[in-house]
Image (cartoon, rainbow, N blue to C red; front, side, top):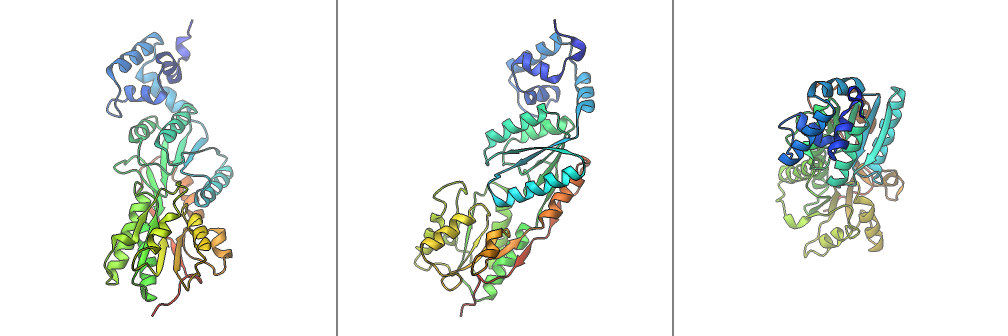
Length: 334
């Protein structure tokens, strides 16, 4: 016989054969769609267990622990692995535990990971969200779990603190720098435009061209899935143009290594054959000869601010300043 006094939202979900997120949507109308059949099944389960919205509120208020969830897009990406390491180290200093999960930019995997974190009753979630699952994030917020989005944000979702970088400004600065070095054919390579980060950087690139009197040519913009093994073909597409670019900005950290590998395969000389600027100051970008000009992000500051913002109170989005580091990969062109 079930002990009704100790019934939890997890018990309701198990009895109704649904996820905790679905139960949360029933407890919080308007936070996501639930079929009428499923809703009735959940209500029946709550009645069987004598579980009420009031007991749900008490449970959520008292069960949050000192563990936070860290949800990053791709741990194999040096950018995200560095951020993760910094956040984990800072969290330990604050006596917090961290559950680290990666979504691999897959909305379904993200959804499964978020459900797991809800079941774990984490105190907060720090995440680089995909462009989906707004209903799930709504349910998480309704449970009283603080949300901090880092590097990117979810469009039209206002319940998260957002800490990112000045993506548009940094892309504009990088483009203007190349233009000041005499480049008029400036290529742009980036990942999919389904994240706020990619969109902001592309917009900055376009504004940089405009500021220097250069017409934006869509042939010089190549967007690839950065998990695609054929992503290096983006370089070939640009170089095969009748009038190829003399400089390229790689606007995504994940795609940079495969582009650099392709440059080596083609035996291109940097910067004599092609000038180059890459997003994120990776270890290899400093060690290569010539060294690679980069957009450097203040990752330690991001990690500190992310953890300090876990109060759950709504704050103004924070945009940290990234810096253009000029090295040897950009040449003057007459």
